[in-house]
Every structure is written in C-alpha cells, then in structure tokens.
Image (cartoon, rainbow, N blue to C red):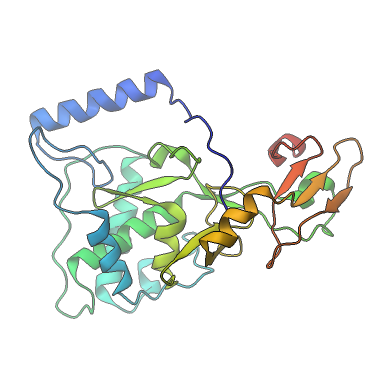
Length: 269
C-alpha cells in the first residue's frame, strides 16, 4: 500500500555539491565511477536497463533467505566461490565509504562458480545494501510494552540511496538502474509476483522492505488500503491503540488520532 504522494525530500546542498564535484573529477581523470552511481559520461548510454536487471533477477536462484543479515556473515558463509568473491567485493565497497566513488573493475569469475558475472554483480549490490539495513524504532519501544502486535519497519541508510519517488519509495542504483529497495530485496530472496499484482505495504511505509510488511496482492486491493485507518494511536494515553482495519490480511500501519503517520523515533528518546 502506498501513502498519498508527498513532496520529494531535499538533500543537503553541501552534500549534493560535494558529490557532483567528485563525480566530475572522476569523469575527467578516470572515466569511471563507483558502481552505484547512475551518472554516465557525456553522450554515453547506460549498458543496462531496469528490465534487463529484473530478467537476471527473475532467472537466478540466489541462496539468500528472508532472515539474511550482513552482520555475522563472512565469505566462508558461502560454498560457491563466486559468492565468496562477491561478498569480498561488497566489503571493499564498504571500506571506500557510503556513496563514495572509485575506479572499479569486477574480478574475473571462477570457473567453479554456478553464477555468471552479471549475477554476481547483483549479489555484491545485495550484500552492500544489507550492510546498511536499519530497523526503525518499533511500536513496543514507544509504548513500553511488547503486547502491540506490530513489527518494526526495515529501511536503508539514505546515504546510499537515490532520491525517493513522489510516494516516498526508496530507490537503489543497481548496475546503473534504479530499482525500488523492496522490489530488489524481494527478488533477491526468491519472491515472484504474478501478472496484475503489486508489491503492497501493509505498514504504509513506502521505504520499508521488511518481508512481513510487503506482500503481493492485486492492484485493486493495494489501492484500497490507502483509505484504511489501520491502528489509531492516542498520544495522551500511552499504550492505547484502536484497530479500525478490516483489510485481509490486516494492515500494520499506525496513524495518530488526527490522521497523521507516527514517527516512533520521537517516542523512543
């Protein structure tokens, strides 16, 4: 489910200028950019399209589970030598720094790997993304109780993301193409949607990619969730929640008694 369109967030002008200067310098001196940049040299077209990237994802059986965590994972966590190398590449990107640019060449793929170079590049992108996953403050912290049946949202550090779209959906550059974070994650863990289905956010948070919050359902049902009141929060009565949702499955969004969305980080200080 998507909330009504909102204005795009404005990046800090200093950060944006610094990135622009760095990109310009690299184009001038090396002609190469960090793999997550969507910038191309003047007059040059990108080699990939979002459709091509999706086709690779749809035809690849990656071994990543829903509960995959970057923390605690090492290259030895994988039997395939290609995935070992892809994990090391992601670690190298992380040491460069968030959203930094660097001349980059993906290493040769081991003949013993079951994956192709384009597939392993996507695996590296996945590892990198998961390294910056963060769980938002959950309702139980805000209310001081674990009885609230609503889970925390998963988001990604905005420093490694592109500007969100008009609905606030987080976008991630993968092989020069912008994909929604929840779509990329869903495909990497093997989820497949049928024709005429949408990714629907039960939590109402378009930046979330928690698989318990993002389901596949018809567009008609997805759009109907926009008008669902979900759970109503009463700020002057701690722990007070009123469920008004009649959707199946039930929505997991919480709005204030005045209709606004809740930022639980404000209640977790």
